[in-house]
Each structure stands twice: as structure tokens, then as C-alpha cells.
Image (tube, rainbow, N blue to C red; front, side, top):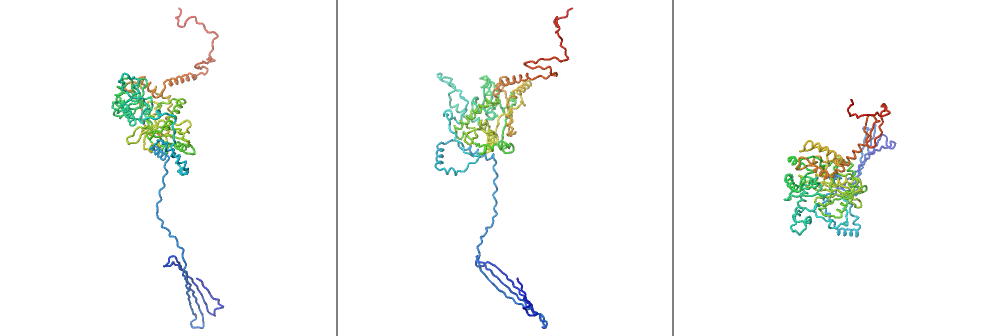
Amino acid sequence: MASLALDPAEAPQGTTMISQKETITVTVDSASDRGVQVHEESTVTSMKETVIDPESTIPVHTLEKKEVTNVTEVTPVKPKKEKKAKENKQKAPTKPEVPFYEALGKQLFKESRESTFEDHHAQEHAAAAVEANPTAAKSKPTMDLLSPPRPVHRRTGSSNSEGYASDNSISTGSMSDIEAKDPSVNVGLKDSLYNLEDYKRLEAMNELIAQYSTVSHMSVRDPSYSFWINKTRTAAIHFKLLNKVAVLAGDPLCTPSAMPSVLEEFGRYCKKARWKISIIGASEHMLEIAKRSGWPVMRFGTEKVLNPTTNEVLLGKSGKRTVAQCRQLLDATKGGLSLHVYVPANGRDIGLETELTRIYDEWRGDRNTTRDNQAFITVFDMFSMPSIMTFIYTTTKEGAINGFAALRKMGTDSTGAGRYHIDPFIQSVNAPRGTSDLLIFASLAYLNADGATYLGLGHEPVSEPDAMWNMHSLVTSATRRVYRHIFGRLPVGGKETFNSRWKPDTEQEAGLYLIFIGRKTPSPKHLLAMTHFANISLRNVLRADWKDFKQELRMPVPVQNPDLMLYAGAAAPVRAPKEFAVPAERPKIEHSVSAPAKT
């Protein structure tokens, strides 16, 4: 709005004029065409005139005048993009990061289900295809850190007769007890003859081992042990003959209810050969049988067990340094190692088996020459029972194997979950530090993915037998002293420290017992056989005792007067105290002190 006042000089006397101008602009969209806008502008001009005449009868006159001007303009409108109504879309929840152990376990479990049979023709065709189309190889997605390709191990110069073994074979020699009926046949050839009955026994024995074996049966792959099977092929006994004592490794391979009758039948067999019987590594079931039978029993160790589903180190609740070390070893820029699984039941790879056997033989040779003898050591024929074995091994960037862990399946528990024993788990000399820890961690991750709840670490001897039954008090006291003396010299402290670092499951660990069957008091033959079975050399024990005895003799004997000191071997000169006067001449004795006095 605007106001305009006239100059008083131009207006007549007594006249006042006021002019007002108001403009209103309205813009609307056309009703007929949405793409056109109509601009309508209206201008209103108002003029007000006031005349003051004192001579008139009406002294004030007011005149008003309004003029309205309308202007209409039509302009096109740029079409506006219609905005889509926002939909309330729910954001997808972010996927939680998969734990390291879970990703590793799934990859190893997936690889274990694949066939390991190497098709050399397929490999040659694949290599030719890559050479013909190199871009296709580059377009292949990069493999994950935990899923590198399985290395190809070429067969070495082993013959077929040595390399190919039956999946159901055990390396314990002939079990045939057939007699040569033809006199012309040399009886010495009996051990080279087999019949259908032997094959049935072999099948039954493999089934019994797979179903009833425990950690104490770790030596089922040791060729120096023997097997006895009953006539009905429903039970077997795994033992080693030492000094005419059949030392059983673990319980009989049968149901707990059948153990008494099986031991009775095996006892009749041993009685014919005049063998004594003892058990090392017996379970709680055999303990109850021994208590009822009055056999001497002694607890000598504990079976240590890891639970793959609740292990604190695997789940990251403990052992942070161990987990970090495993990550670094699997990092391509640091350790550069990769993990693989070999299941012989899915197909035999003779080249891989030869390489694993070579690493084991080198490790065992180094252990026997550079380290103290370990207790309860078993020499394995690594692939004598392929149907129950799983191998997890590590390789370098170049594909060279530098460590492996052997998992032996021991049946299932009451819930159907698998039970396993890990032995051995070793690394080569040139493997990076911590490779053996990586193998245990990978084994736990693999069994976690498989749903297993039991991974046995082996035996851990106790420092002193804390429980003994059916022994005389004098025998009990002497046995404790001998046990402390012998086992105190065994290098088992490192094993105890190693086991505790992996947080064993205390709910699953169990006691292990020595049982002397059919005796009220253990005989010297029993004790000698037990020490040999446990890889304890009494000669080394006596040698160590003699060394300690000589060391004690060389130590100075503390006395009150330092001038009077005696040393073993070369005696130091003894000086008399200063206050003691030595006579110049020795007094002469004319008669014996013991002689009667002269009257």
C-alpha cells in the first residue's frame, strides 16, 4: 500500500487531497490445465479530497474516488516430480560376526565330508583349461583364509604291497590258531595261513574297538601289542606280554556287565600258558569288579578330557594369548600356515600318508635321542586302523606339511555325540612355534562343529597313590614309598602344566587304576611288568639313585668347629684345636688294655 499527499501550493485554499494505491497479486493453478499458472494482479487506487470552507454552511466536504485495475497473465509451469511416499521399511538386522573358532570348525568339518581321492586325470584337464583361459582363473574369487585349497601330495617311491592296506586291517600279526592237519605241511607256516574264521574275527575286533575303546586303549595301533577274542566274538582283550605277565591296556572291549565272565575266560587261557594278569588304566567299572573279587588295586593317574562345546580356551573366555597366536599362524602375511583334514575312510591318499608317517618317525627319533624318556609312550602304526581315524594337518605356503594331529574315534556317549582321543599331535623341527597348540585348537573347533563333547588328552599320573584297596598295611606303605621314588623321577611335570593350560573338563575326568588280578599281594613280576609297560627303566632309576648318592657324599658335612671337616674321597688334614697340647712323644703301652691287671 502507498500514500500520496498533494503539494499545498498546487491545491486550492482549504483543500486537502490524499491518494492511496494498493496492489494485490494472486497466483493460482489453472483448473483445466495443471501445467499452466494464472497470475492475476489487482490495483486499487483511492483518492480522498477534503475541502474546508468556513463560509459554507457545511464547513467540511469529503469526496472519495476508487479505481480498480485488473491484469491477468498466464504462464506455463514446469512439471514437478512427484515424491514417492516414504515407506516404513524395516532395516535388515546386521549379521553378527562369526566367531573365529566357529568359522574354522565349519570349514574343517565341510572339508572332512569331501572325498580325498585324487583324480589325476581331472587335475590334468583342469590345468589345461586354466592354461587355455587364463582370465577365467583370475576371475575366480579369492579363497578365504580358513579355506585354502587342499595341497596335492605326490606318491613317493613306495610299492603297492607296502602302501595299500585294507580299511579293516590291524597290524598285530596273525591271530589264527588253526593247526596244520597235513603232516607234510610245515607247522612253522601256521602263522602265514588264514581262513574265513580269521576274517570274521578281524571284522568283529574292529567293531569292538570302534564301540568300546577308551583312552587307555591308545595302543591299539601299536604293533607290539596283541589281541585276544572270545569264541563268540562278542568281547576282546588288548594286552602286552612282559615277563610272563599279560598286562591289559584298559578294560576288556565289551559291555561292563560282561567283563567278569570275559576275564574268567581269558584267565583260563593265560593259566595254560602260566601267565599272570594285571590291568593298567582300568576304569571305574573294573574297579568295582576288583573290589568284589578282592584283587589289589591302586589309583595311579587321571584321565584328562576337553569338552569341545564348553572349552573356555576355544570359546575365547580364557587363553587369549593362545587364540591370538593361532590367528597369527593362519594369517597369510604372518605365519602363512593353512589347515586341512584327511579322513582315510573317505578315500586313501598314499602320498599324504607317507609324508605324515615320515614326520612322525622323525619326531619320534628326535624325542628318543634328545629328550628324557616319557612315561606311557606308544609307538604307532599311524594308518593301521583307517576307519576310525581323522587327521588334521598344517601346511606352509609352499604346501609342505609341518605338523599333524591324529584323532581316534572311540564310539559315542549316551546322547549319541562322538568321543575322540587325540594322540599324537606333533610339529616338525622347522615348524613355527605354537603349531602344536594350533593343532589342538583346530581339533577342538572341528569337533565343536561335529557336535562332539569328549576329547581325551591322555593319562596324567598322580604324584602319590591316594587310593589303595585290598592290600596289607605294610604292603600299602611300601608301595607308596616305591611309587613316590620311581614316579618322582619321571618327567611328567610339563605334561601336567600343558594339560591345565587347556582347561580340562573336571566333570568328565576319571580315575585310572592298576589292578593285580588273582593275587592278594603284587608279586615282583607284576611290578616289573608294570614298570616296563609304563616305559620306566629301573636301570635308569638305579643309575640316577647312585648319581645322587655320590653327590651327597661330596657335599661337606656341617660341624660346629670349622677346623674339623671331613670330605669324602680325599680327606683334608685334621688340625687339633689350639687349646689342645700334643705331647712330644707317644706314651708307650707295655700291655694290652684288654688284658687283665697284674697282681
